[in-house]
Image (cartoon, rainbow, N blue to C red; front, side):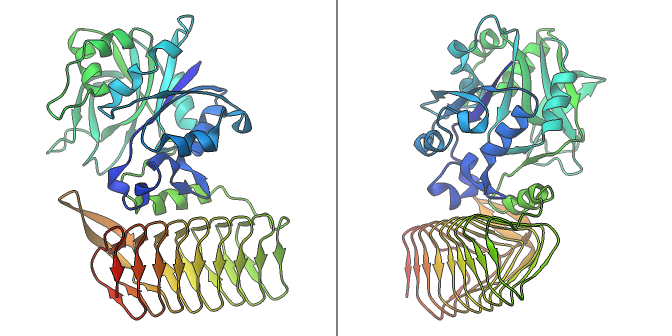
Length: 405
């Protein structure tokens, strides 16, 4: 069986991190989200993959290449205009062998556990099957109205509660889906949505079913959702201190993994789950607390404190800094005493709408330089390629290419 992975979109709601990479390449536990998706497919013995790419496709293709290093065979097809999920799936039509009876479709920007894929395949029936899971808060999702396993209606982002079953966007299709997609009219927002195709199939008396799962699945819709995804994935990290150097006087509790040529200097205190990449230099006397991922080539100077955060590759954190519940993009450097406030239920305006982050410090885009003694108030974001002078308090979002003096 083949899998079609949808990886063409930008992920605008994850800006500023997606100014420089597509959402599928955002790191969770030091691996792109897309790599976690591929690993879940491999564990279900699905090794032939069609990647539908578009935005920043070169970064995806350079990382995964032909897939051999990930135990799969990858073919690429480009969706030149991002005009909906149905349109994206249709791009793979010529790459699905007609001998194949069915194929899996997954989103490349969701955290998917291997058990979720298994539940879909084992529960598949009828002309098309979608994977459903239960959520208390269904706002922002497509909601499923079903009778037993038979899907009666798919309602996108309903205003009132009609069901706790949501559509995960993971499907098992027969080849006939391509003909049905070709007949699907464009929606009022100018997209060809696969849920419109499925609803048309239901309305025409075809058998669309659902397979329910309690397995791991998370849609990291906003940049701060990466922190929750990171916490979930780090739950599987195993202790490995053999590749790097841990000096005497370092205290480590819980599961902590460090990469090649990484040094943890004396007096440092680390509580897992924590993952630290290759060629890093931490300490002396730094504190790293749970649910933290630190990428490759990162330095964290003495007396700094990192908690529940993602630091991407090539980050430099200077002395006496405190980073909490934050995502720091690649090639970011800070001066001493860089502090991120942490707030609960922080309200953030995204695309003209207020959204709530359960817990958030800041989001910092790639290639940004931050001076010493800088305080970032909770929920305020610093975009890509910014320069922040020393002694500043950031109490509003800073747009791309800004200089704050």
